[in-house]
Structure formats: C-alpha cells, structure tokens
Length: 243
Image 1: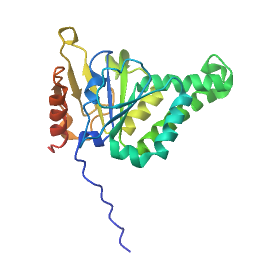
Image 2: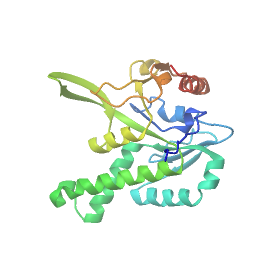
Image 3: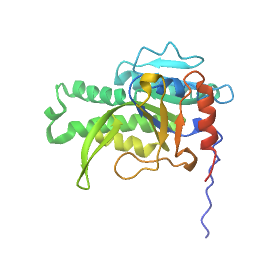
Image 4: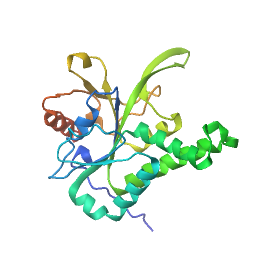
C-alpha cells in the first residue's frame, strides 16, 4: 500500500512561523515584532516587563511568575478559536525571563535556594521540563515569536577562542528553543548609539546558533525605527522569496 502524501499549507506571512529574536536591551526587538500584523490581526504579547505601554493595537498579558504563565496558557488553549480570529501570533517577551521564572518555580516547589541543592541533578531536569513544556504548549496554539536579551560569550572552538552573542538563558533550554523555531534573528549592537540597528539572519555554522529555514531571510536588514512597518514589509518580502 502506498504511503499517503502529507502536504503543508504554504505560509503567506512571516508572522506564521516561529522566530527567536535576540539582542541587547533597547535595540528595537519588541517594537519590530509589534508590527507582525496580518489582515487586521495583531500580536498577543506575553511579557515579563512593565514597559509595553508604547505598543499599539495589541494585547499585552503581564506575567510575574511561572504560575501566571501556566494560567495564561490554559486560558489561551480554552479560547483558541477566538485567539486565532483576533491575533496573528503569540510573542513571548522575554523568553530569557521565562527561563528564570521556570527555575524560580522549581526552587520554590522544592523549598531550596539553589538548583544544586536538589540531589542527583533533578533540579536541572525539572527546570528544563517545565520550560520546554510551556514552549510546546504555546506553539501548539499558534505561531510564537520569542524575544531574548543577549550577552557576549567567549569560548574555545576547534582550538580557537571565539566571541559570540547568545541569548541569556540556560544553555540546554537555549539549544531546545533554537530547535523549535524556524529562524533566529540577531540585532547587531553596532550603530545603536546613532539610532541605527541591523537585524541579521544566518545559515548557522556549527559555532553558534542554528540558522534560518528560509533562504530569503539569510541577509542583513537595516531597521527603520521611524517606520517599522517598512522593515516588516521588507522582512515579509524576503521571507516569501525562494532562492
């Protein structure tokens, strides 16, 4: 018996995939993702910060701990049909803070002050399990974009010292998240002092983070902070371009 062929619906907008955006604070990550609107639908932000009053025409859900996130996910699951009608995507801002909230939840649940106080490495296992479960549940609802702060890391690769900006989170959770998204965009810090920033996607080289699944995105994009809608349109056009 021949195997039944499976087909996937072609994506019509960059909002319909999952992307990890990372970079230094105040580089424009949140403002850009706020432009990910399609057919009148707007992003649904799950945020760990209070400074989102500048966002327009979007829903913002502030969470203060990991239990808040769990309740939010349960509510979104229960109202998925309405969510899909009103919103283009979910945005987790900041994914690195959610990583910390998951760790804090494990510490509180085990009544300890340090992960290492939980024997046999089980604290690390619990931390990663909770974080990954939350990511999987969110992505089962609709496309999710993740925003994270970056830090410069130094390490030795093939005998040479390498410096690379990476998201500020648990190494294993970062690797997991990179495997759950279809592209990783980095806001290059040079030029920030002059009000300029560049968003870059790469193919992945084994040294750092994974690359983009979409060849059209593998390039640099200059961020137009005065008209982010133009930047979104350029990203979307590149996303739909096949090389």
